[in-house]
Each structure stands twice: as C-alpha cells, then as structure tokens.
Length: 223
Image 1 (cartoon, rainbow, N blue to C red):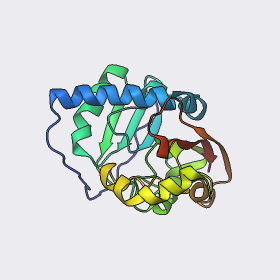
Image 2 (cartoon, helix red, strand yellow; image 1 turned 60 degrees about the horizontal axis):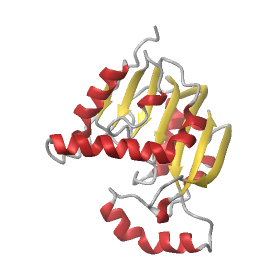
Image 3 (cartoon, rainbow, N blue to C red; image 1 turned 30 degrees about the vertical axis):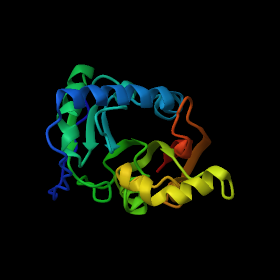
Image 4 (cartoon, one colour; image 1 turned 90 degrees about the vertical axis):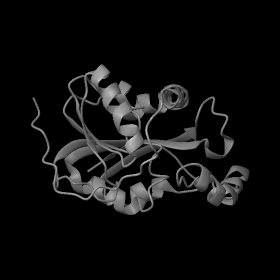
C-alpha cells in the first residue's frame, strides 16, 4: 500500500457556515448529482485512469469527484469550508476512500515537494483568489511525470455574447457564488504554470441551465 504523505505544520483557513442541517445535506446530495450530470462526460475524460494511492484534490467540497476515485485511494482533501467536512468524510467512508481533510487554501499546500502522482480539481480555480499561486503549488507537490487533472469553467471566447455577459456579471456573480469569477482564462494560467505538457479540450457543459458559466475546459497537465 502507498505510504501516507507527510502533512507539514500549517495554519488553518476555515470558512464556517454553521452546522450542516438534514435539509442542507439533502440539497447538497441533489446539487452533486445535478452537477455531475452536467460535468460527468468531461470528468470521464479527465479523471479516468486514476489509480489507488495518494491523491490530492483542490476544493473537495462534499465529495463530487469520489465516483472517479479507485477504492483504496487516500484522498488529501483541500477544503477550507468546515460545513463540507462531515459530509465529505461520510461519503468517503461509504466509497471506501480514506480521507485526510486539509482546511487550508489551495495557495499554500502543507505537503512536501514532489510527493504525489495525482492532483485533481473541478470547478474550483474560478474561486481561488490567487490561481497562479495555487497552480504553482500543484507543480511543486507533483513528482516528475505526475499529472494534474482538471475540469474547469472558463471565460468564453473574446468578443462573444457569452463573454461579454460573463465580464458584466463578474462582481454580482462572485458575491452569489462563493467568489467565482465567470470570466477567468484558467487555461492560460495552467499553460503558464510550468508543466511539461498540457492537454486540454474546450466545450460546453451539457444540460446546464446556467448559461453564463457553461464554457469549460477539461484535460491533464503533466509535471
């Protein structure tokens, strides 16, 4: 079995929205199913092939990506939102996934250099205040040859109607959606982060009613 990672001393960055109520848990379950209905085909392409071992996930939330992890995986779940911790632990237990919850920001991972083969994230980098710093941390903790797997919604093409709407909605959308920037060029940031290769595709989320943020990228970047 893969040896556990050494978690370095760290300061917690905790967002506390209070206790998760039974109604909140049901809504979270419905939200995860609905989001995976939209993103599932993209996750199938980006996350397929993940093997059991140590996997770091940025913004693990309530566990929307557990279906793509192999049983026996040890998940290092970067998640500052305390409300998500218990639901995430419960889902991991049911899925046969050992979880280590890291209540820290993605910009400062409490892990050694070159310690892991896989880092994943989905619909997260739009909310990270300093996405460049978070990606630098991904590059740092990946071993040479390790992979960063991602599914992210991104800015629509420049000059498009959707792009203009995204730009206009940046401030109110961010206030309503946990700091999400609907017009962020995340792919350019990934390409500039220092990976040896980046393979990504662009498209639209299927069956999503949220028109302004339907533009997505998915793929892998290799250290």
